[in-house]
Amino acid sequence: MEMADRIHSAIKDVHALDNEAGRDTWLNRVHPAVKLPVTLLFIALTASYSKYDLGGVIRVTVYPAALFILGDVSFGQAMKRLRFVLPFVLFLGILNPFFDRTVMMNAAGIPVSGGIISMLTLMLKAFNTVSAAYLLIATTSIRKICYALRKFHVPKIFVTELLLIYRYIILLLQEVERIRDAYQLRAPGKKGVALKAWGSLPGLLLLRSADRAERVYQSMLLRGFQGEYALKGSEKLRALDLLYGFVWAGVLVALRFVVL
Amino acid sequence: MHMADALIAPAVAGTMAVCSGVVAAHSIRTVRLSDDRKNIPLAGVMGAFVFAAQMINFSIPGTGSSGHLTGGMMLAAVLGPEAAFLSMIGVLTIQCLFFADGGLLALGCNIWNMAFYGCFIGGGLIWRAILKGGISKKRITAASILGCILSMELGALSVTIETTLSGITELPFNVFLGAMLPIHVAIGLVEGLITAAVLCFIYETRPEMLKGIGKNDVSGSSRMKRGTVITVIGVAAAVVGGVVSLFASGLPDGLEWSVERVAGEVEGAGGGAYTIAERIQNFFAFLPDYSFPGSESAAGTSVSGIVGSAMVLILVVAVSWLIRSFMKQKQS
Image (cartoon, rainbow over all chains, first blue to last red; front, side, top):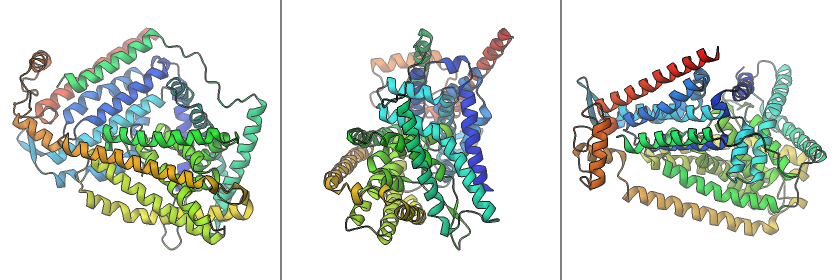
């Protein structure tokens, strides 16, 4: 069942990431307010390479490569995430060799067209950017990311919502799983939700979610909720964190702009 | 429709992040000013609802295929456009971080393409305009279908413009647009029908939950809000237009850039900074034909450039392995 697989794998993915982020490794301990900007810098620099600069994109791949190995982060899990990105990237990239046939270099006597180089560059960019986001979330819990967002003065309404959505995703996914099971037991062999239940099935889920939100709000008030989750934790900025940030920023900027 | 980081240029991503940020700031202000503090937890849980509801397959009669929900317009009808927009940003952020569905850098684009149009155009302008004269199932259905198709089309148009401006694909703009628009009419129609079915169900069971009707009617302030939306679109158009002109005049495209470098026509070469840079390069570059302007090939596009880069990468991987095995040995 395709639907069952999607829900199940989504729940599994979130749990797997939670477990990864909950480990106690040196990379997990790096301050989130340092890791977040370094990740963004890396992604922006990778995206900034011209579509023919395959060599440049290979050079900055040192960032994910080093972190996967040194941080002992699961490479296979990160690659699984590429399945969401690859179809669209392939759709756009695979046509490049057909549209762009200008010969740009000779590799051992074989002429290589600009289209092939730009296709390979695009693939590597996809790998790099997906890996960087994975390296962030697999070593930093959402709570820590929210803490970093607050440090960067992202409004607390937004941060609170982000945390709430995250906390309720698993709960509501499990609810959808139960609803789907109940529905399929009554409609065996059907691929999806039939037209006559298009309104009532998600509609009931919506009403139940709204009721749940009401109860959640009441319980939050009873526990002293003042409009913001208490995110203050033990995350103190250490000299090592700053060193991590400056070293990576320096290396990446140098790879991008200095070493040609 | 989620855009990946690999498909976006930083300038385009930055521009769209600013546009989305302006709308988010407006939304936060509106939600903060509303007296109902319950709205924040409601928007949070409803965001999780949208995420979960996106997992449901809806079988499309007579086709054998199935459709899905995006949820922006539905959320806007229940929460109001501003709270729905914030909720959708949360959903898109979680999707990007946890499921690699859309990139971190491209988040501003994705928020604009998927949340802004659905919440403010579909769930804002269209919903209010059609339900102004009264509410009925027919009107809800008409608003949902029109709103969803329009939001999807605007989203698809934006994806095409953003990708083309980023200079990633060789696909000509009109071919790309021709591929994107028709399919998104179909996707929008299915989304509209599901949204209509759900909102009609809510109207039958708990009509007070729908925004823009009865005592939840906010049409008194809708004129101002519509004005805000139009202003935001105007500003966005101006900013995007500015970026277009920058791209058109300031920066040569990738191919021109490469050709320029191959031909060695980089202006200004020969200055003091250039000489120092050349010395540094001479010192560091271990493959002679690495990438000097005027040499046979452009930096990342020459065989030696690519081989050199690959060697750097292999070296870093090897050193990292060594360090890790050393660390593990030390631990045990």
